[in-house]
Image (cartoon, rainbow, N blue to C red; front, side, top):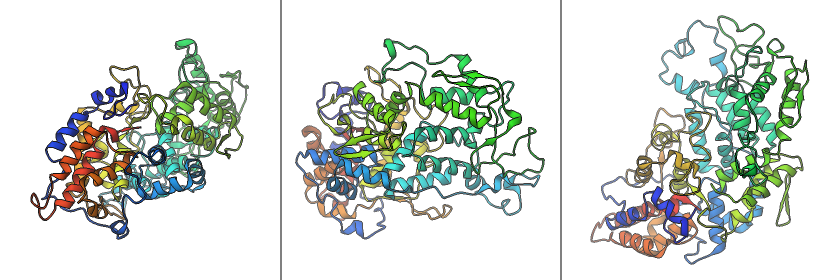
Length: 594
């Protein structure tokens, strides 16, 4: 996808679908984001005050710098000066290799399994010890505590690639806190995605299938062996592994039109093959467990076999695989996984989804095929460095292939099709990371997550917040993130920047454990304010890897320069920084991630 502020041929679509360069120019002419009456953002550390935010950055065209920023955009939650130094020091291949070795920062907040070991006839939040807790539902049943952890990890933790891949996986293997409840169960599920982000796709499919949260969300826990619910079987095929149409290795439709991968009879066969599972042991109620032969609701582990629920008939699956009559639930699951892992659709399907999440909404067929080869081989080599175990489905090899492919790292590929719209989560974290920010996640849950239509862990359905094939109007391109983009959310993106820069962000909420608020620290940028052009170029170099195009650059510099000791003797330097940050981070060049 081309930049709306650049000169690429088809890049104009971004300006039409976005608010366009004219808005940035208009804002610049009005003085941008500055407001001398707004509270000054609170400084949290002294290291940010001392550091030069542009140290090591070139204000001239620099291919190495631009690629470092591009990799940071693709593989992290946004560039910071420290991250860019690491990427430039190590190079893309070694940085990716290092990230693949880092342990994951896990989710820890929220209540435990007591909600499903409650033998009182009272609802858990009405029991002694909880009846007076106004935050019982939030802490024990909702996903809100996990959102605090998510944003803290995304903004501050070093295992950026693992956290970013886990975000991609949670948008493929969707479970929603709007439909299923139990904080500890969601915590177990999303920690599983973090732990398996660089593992093997077969194991991911197994763990997702056996997760009680997924069993509840898609109705296959305690499934009826005589008339099984088909929800999970259908989404396992359609969304988690193969898609609905036969694919070439390039991800293109086989024969140029949709030829179905499966029919309803096959979906039913998968539903029957996946019967025979119940909750793990540990759950208790005042009334016992139902139906007979099952365990009570509990999310403290993987689901376990329940022979009384198992369909014992032979079931024919894809890839020539058959579940034999009398197979146990674990043996039938292995046959299901065999049928998916051996199917030719799996490699291009998974590869295209990961590329879309990390790099580009419209990858070339050659790019998809190269990543698919790494997925199928379980190995990938770049710059003399080998990735993967050699076992098909290796995620470390696949992720490395996605990020180190020439189409991800190069600048000579079709610029009009390169990149993707920055999804709201990355908009929120990117601004914080670039501007020495910190967050406890509280303001990003119900406030900005809702306003921007992407509240983490609460997708509206199993189809995620947006579909992978959402069309960009007036073009032949797809733009998944445009599925939640409209006039309101476009303005809310700007409002979010105003929240950070003009409103002072949000202070600590005493009702949030470990609260630190959500704020940026502009202190280190103040010494750069005297040079308006240098300030604008520095922020652009930090967040884009390059300077703005000449026309918009001149308008942004003019807006920043308006603030002087004569226009605001007390705050002109701060208002210059605010205006520059607002206009650079609000620009289509930043919002359309290239």
